[in-house]
Length: 383
Image 1 (cartoon, rainbow, N blue to C red):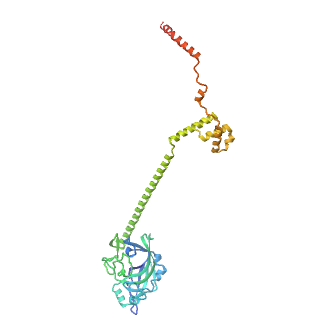
Image 2: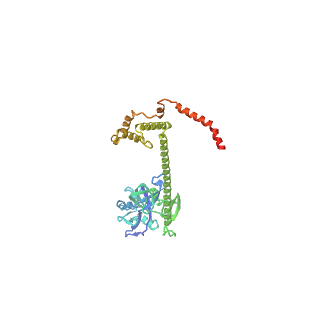
C-alpha cells in the first residue's frame, strides 16, 4: 500500500558553485502512532485506524537503504516516479548518507532545478515522503503506552515531494496532493514559527469524529484521555463478559443440583419396597434366632447376621476368609432345614383345654362363704 508522511524542512538551503541547492532534512519518524482514515487503509467498519511504526521497521537496514537515490519532486506525482517518468518529474535526488537522527531519519538532498530551489527559498518548505509499506492489523500498545490497531512494516521509499505548507482551514490531510499518491495521516503540524505568530506548533486531530486543533502538549493529553477511555471500555466489556460467564456457571450448577435431586427422588424406596424390606428382615431375624437364639440381632446388618449364623453352625474357620457371597450360600444351606419358631402355633399345638374344675369349685365356695359372714364383721366393728 502507498503512503505519504509530512515533515518540515528544518535546515537552510545551501547553494553550490554550479547553483544547485543542498539541504539536510528529516524525512521520517519511527516509534510513533499515526492516525489514518479507515477508508484509506481498506477498513470499512472504522472511521480511523491507529497505525504503529515500530523503530525496528523504520530504521531497518533495507528501509534505510531505500532512501538513497530516490528522486525529489515538486508535489506528489499521481503514480509515483519510475524510470519512465523520472526525466519529467525529478527536480533533484536524495544522497547516499542516510542517517538515524534520534527518532528521525535524516537525508541529504540535492536540488538541481532552479525553479524548485527558488520555490523552497520562497517558503515551500514541507517535505512529504512517498513510499510503500505493508500494514498488518493487530491490536496492541507501544512501549510508550500508545494503543494501536495496526502495524506498518517493510518500508520502501519512492520519492520525496516538496509541497506547500498546510495551515488551518478544513484540511485534515498531512500532505498536499496526497490523494494522488497514497494515504496520509490525519493529524498534522499546521503552524510554523517562521510564518505564524503562534509560538507553538498546532496539530489537527480527530476526536470522536470531530476535528480539533491543539498544541503538542494538548494532543498528548487528548491521546492519553482517549487511551484511558479505550482502556475503560475494555474493562467494562470484560466485566460484562465475566458477569455473564458467572451467571452461566450458576445456572449450570442449579441444573446439576436439580438433576441430582430428581435422581435421589427416583432412587428412594417406594412403600411396597419398604414393606418387602421389613418382611425380609423379619424373616431373616426369625431364621437367625431359630439357628442360634443367642445371636444379637439389634442394629446388626443382614450380612453380619448371616456370618454370625454360619460361625455358630459351622465354626469360625468356615467363615474366616469367606466372601459375603460365600457366606450367603452357606447360610442358605444351613437355614434350609431350620423351622422358624411360631409362638401362636406352639400354643395351639396341644389343643384348647378348659380350666381345672376342682379349682373352680373351691373358688366358688370361698366366695359364697365370704358373702354370708360379711355382716358379722360389720357388727363387731360397731360394738
